[in-house]
Image (cartoon, rainbow, N blue to C red):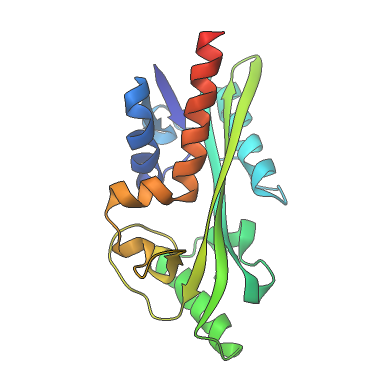
Length: 198
């Protein structure tokens, strides 16, 4: 079974593929299937954005499509960057620019760290059928000194609860086991197995 992932982010594709391969599902990024103009993300929540993307691409391609919206919520910043995590430092900002902006915001408040959580919401849309959704989170803290070269996004600044290492310092398998996206995909797999057995 092939499912399109509504992203061009190869890091996200690798994480999700790792979880779904045992289920016999091949995950391919949307740009490997067709050139489709990306929808504007107008949702005010992760849920709304994931739903918008999944149903949009599924309708355009006539295939099952997974869309995921996720981000970092930092307690000291009142939950920001939240749904604006990928563009915290501006439209088309790089991971490095977003990380720098986060560090600046913490240092403005004279903080070296803050409680935070990663949140992930996944929606799986089918052409002309009801969709499925799941969510996951991982709690921890953000720091102002980046560490590690693995992962992407805010991983070099995020230390999960119970760990001393950042997400960017953890092996991919370990990161997937505890990550917000990994948890959301695991829940989705359980739902898919239940649906298949009905």
